View 1 (tube, one colour):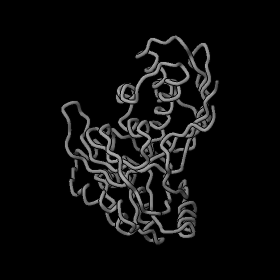
View 2 (cartoon, helix red, strand yellow; view 1 turned 180 degrees about the horizontal axis):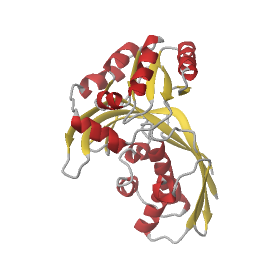
View 3 (cartoon, helix red, strand yellow; view 1 turned 30 degrees about the vertical axis):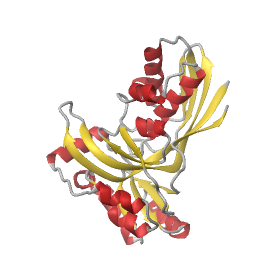
Amino acid sequence: MALLVKTYAKINLFLNVVSQRPDGYHNIETVLQAIDLFDQLQFSLSDALQIQSNFDIALKDNLVYKAAAALQLATGVTFGACIKLEKNIPLAAGLGGGSSDAAATLLCLNKLWETNLSLEELKKIGSPLGADIAFFLGKQPTALAKGIGDELFSLSQNVDFWLIVAKPDFGVSAREAYDLYDKNPNKDGLVDNFTKSLAGSSVSKIASGLYNALEKPVMEAYPKIKKLKELFIKAGAIGAQMSGSGSAVFAITQNNVDAQRIADEALKKGYQAFVLRPSNYTVKICQT
């Protein structure tokens, strides 16, 4: 049996840093939205763990391999798997691509290896690998996340909008983004006000409520990210914001014509750009 899976990216519509924890992590409040930019993975049984991919990364840094190895360790299984990864989600962009791939790996190998772990058990295995893994395992395309990002509350999202996601020619690690934040903290966002706007039907209310506490310190360190946001606003986006720890920035429009026009402006300036919609899936098994 082989499993073919699509693993979707996310954006942070809202991100507030609540406090720094004794373990060095941060407690946050963030509203996550899955978007229809996805990687594809194929899983089949094998004698050993094998990863084939269209991008080059050491196994020790590959979240797909680390998730598979963690599941092996937790369950004691001796099976292997051949995992083929087609990477489309940009790396180190704040879009959760690695976490999405890791979540799919836990879900699919749990099925392929017949380990029969519950969703909560998979979340415990995935948590040390990445806080966003819980969101992608949860299968709720719009969610409020608290704690380190692993306490999830499903949200209704009733607003129809288009997105442009663009990334400069460099990435920003989550650790660096939070280190920059700790030197220049700010807590101006109110998550309850933002979640109410999701339940309405106004694109402008969502756009006006966008907030990311990491954005200001990261943009001060990386002016090119700030210039990308300014490009979006100047080109007519209703709202724009850095996603997660960056370096990607997303913009919101009401229609695909405006979205494509704005994406073309970003492409002309040398940014990688995508025209997207919100997704109904975090992980989707397409073929068995």
